[in-house]
Image 1 (spheres, rainbow, N blue to C red):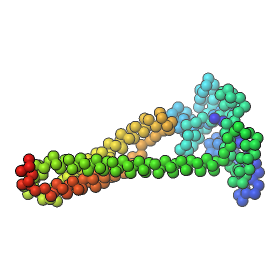
Image 2 (cartoon, helix red, strand yellow; image 1 turned 60 degrees about the vertical axis):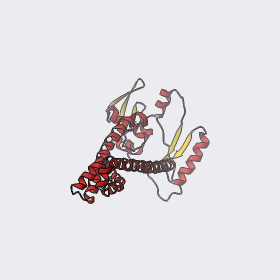
Image 3 (tube, one colour; image 1 turned 90 degrees about the vertical axis):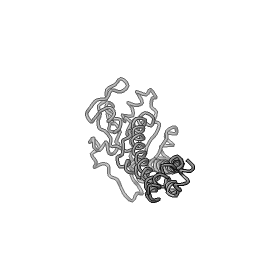
Image 4 (tube, rainbow, N blue to C red; image 1 turned 180 degrees about the vertical axis):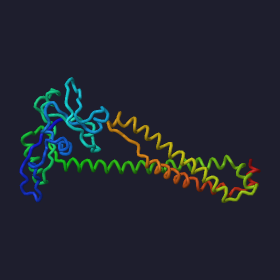
Length: 276
């Protein structure tokens, strides 16, 4: 993708931005400000993820669509799709794509709200087939999407925890019924109800710990391998989440196994041997 930048005096703004004194020719400034209008036709800016996958850095050369481009800079990570993009001169993109003198989208940035709103209207009247948006609108939309995805994640997490708890409770009840003879033997040998309860809860805690850690490892591996393939984003495991996953799994299994453990502790040894 490529682009240019249109500047307009910040009339009516409480805060003024002076870009004349900024060294926009420096690669660092390019990386921070996305000043794409300073790109030469043989230069490109790389998103952080794209550069990492290709093993490229500032000053390297990139072969793209049969042409060689100089890497002017690698942009800082933003956590958006821009991390996987290549930014080039507008005329270069138009030539390589064969689309001709076409601009698909213009992002208005670096302006106060009054100027930005005015520019949007003016640009839309000049380029009716071009989508014109402000950075504020883009950010607002992204924040709304992120909030919705976060809420959906919490909803799915709650459903999974509930289903896992019910499944664990059913398995614990079945385990108690299958081991009535062993429970009766323990109690006949002097095991107290508290000991039996703790025995079942300890087993549940170990199962929860193993399940939480294995689930974290399996989920991380799936995300690392499938993330770039399906979502075109790089995924990196977060070790601290392993502790959270293990703790949540242990708590869920303990809560789900409490009543089955209490039921096991209240069994009558005589009845256990008689029924078996």
